[in-house]
Length: 301
Image (tube, rainbow, N blue to C red; front, top):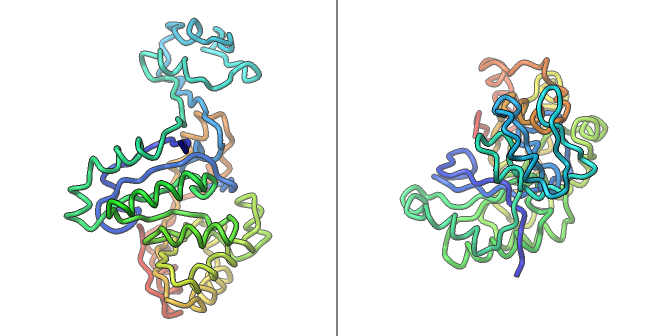
């Protein structure tokens, strides 16, 4: 029985495809974007997310840890990462949810049971299921089985992807997908490498292959001030998207700092703490520039 590593469900989502949706978040991503709002999705392993402000120092987690990876320190609980195997026992016993296990194995049937709870809302609103992450194509067997099962019961299927995967796999997934939410972060391969950890060459190749295969695609562009909102990058973005067959819709998404606190809880560095969110005027300027290429562009999801 194929299992996937799931770290969250978002019900009644209005920004991950048409209508009201349930978004299923899978663990693992080959990118490490500086602005990632789900940094807990990047690792392909389960993780413990810590909220020190919630800790009351009761010691339940210390006593429950089977590997003795936790101990009392001068400023709270200390985790020995060399001993921790992310079993989640500390999170299970924590009375204040100061420790949270991020990522649990689930079967397709278990995920579908969660998704189908809200079927009445999908039917009324034209919504469905969106599989996101992380990068859902990092769990290809589970993703394909999940999409096939949703299709079997006639639930609309969207896949939110970075496009950084084997082209053949992406085209196989396209056969079981009604809509792709395709991230486009930067047109310059070196800058893309700097800010996301990978080049954009495969991503652009796969986007064109997907469009030529006739897939329905919604391009999603995060607008990060000082990184990808300059005139040169917007011109290249507009040129490329206008050259794709099928005329994909485009959403420009304003940068926000929703992931900053999560980076801290995971003990990770957030490199854009000094970056401000773009103004409404700046977002409208981006929208107008891309619209000038004949694209259908909206601000927000």
